[in-house]
Image 1 (tube, helix red, strand yellow):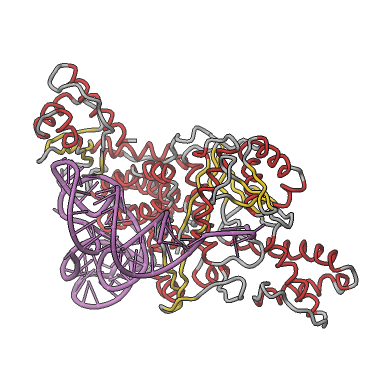
Image 2 (cartoon, rainbow, N blue to C red):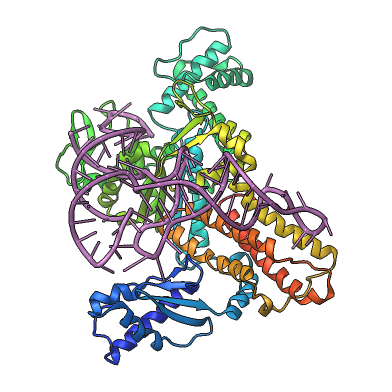
Length: 555
RNA sequence: GCCCCUGUAGCUCAGCGGAUAGAGCAACUGCCUUCUAAGCAGUCGGCCAGGCGUUCGAAUCGCCUCAGGGGCGCCA
């Protein structure tokens, strides 16, 4: 990455200055190098001398004047200057810059990848909504954050696995089956009440009718407990199908759907309980079994097994993460959770320590809730009351690409409003289309060139000296930095901003630079620009794909 | 009461220690006989919630206040 190269260069120069006594000895801090935001300040800039002033006990301008002459000569820099009050501004060599087009083209789809993860095994677990109702917009946010992050990490050199944790055990699932039983019985003409705290949504009526249509009345002629068990499995498969379809609608494919129930059936939970007992991390109190970080009771203790004998969700989580880290050997695990689970995070890290695992290997991304609005008015969501706008409805209304872009473009920790009417209204004036349009335009250029049988050979890239050409290449060089930034901070929203920026550079270039020319005198530049545009297409497609969006060839 | 997240342009949000704070939408001006005008160029719009601190330098870090959201279940 060019920024890192420049930072290394500066570091060398500082060290050299220290060695020859021009600067006093001090530990050199990390060297910041940024892309210049303003014209006339070069391409890259570093404020390092401002930072060194106190360490070197010298004015920033003087430090800069010492360092700059000591910078090794490199092919990628054409000019370096010092600017008040001590910035070092660096100009990239135009020939080097245009030569990057070939590097991008040669790298192809791998361009932008970064060797950060060193093929470490990382699991991203996301959505994992209770299979007791359809997905809503919040799950949508979870989905795009998780999926895009998985893509980012793959591009950053991790060996990534995507997983959905199916909460098919526990109280909520029990209520779900009870509700389904009631709706099923009702569908067959028997009056049966939905439990008080059951699921009131209309979708449960449909599930009941569907179960009745597909399985007849056989569950009414068996003991209730058996019927509940049978209907539980049927309801679960209906809901998982629905969730899987929604995910696929957004282009999300899981490597594994992990059953919570399996942790109890295969003995994992029992084994982990033994470990916790041996490690003195459990305590019996009030007829329940509690997790306690140090073995003695305090008010932050958490129930593992309830006094009625049933394990709680935390019990499953411990066993589940034991399975992830110890059994399956993931180096890192990333869980994506809504803000309503935020209080659970400290316990998870305490659990990691109790299992003897490094808590840093578990990252939990907490995203703030999405407020769904309809022409400015808040739409409250609750699976329980059934007042729900499903993710599916939103996807069908607004389109998967737009939903993905919108939900992805904001940082996880910022709350966001999703106005259905606005999203639909804007869907023609959307950044989504702006970015995809850039890609489609490029494809159109390339199609034209093919029709005219131009651009089969490569051009002379040295001709790419127009400011817009250079600016476009500069933007393309940022991709690896963005991937690294997003991977390091587990913050895929940076991709959205980058995609917008890159598309903008392309559109400006498009206005100023004609690519396919029929004038014989333009043949050389046409070939070079076709290379440029092909590189831009690859970069644009790469970002779009990492974000999980399509890169249309025409619009 | 305690804990977490957030307060940046009319709206939705980027920026999160560096030089004149950005984008989209909204409003207004221009630009299609040439590769898609779902585009481009420009104008308008900001005491970066408020206060105090740290720093050569703060939208960015710390503390306090105010405002919004979330949490503080033997639910997940």
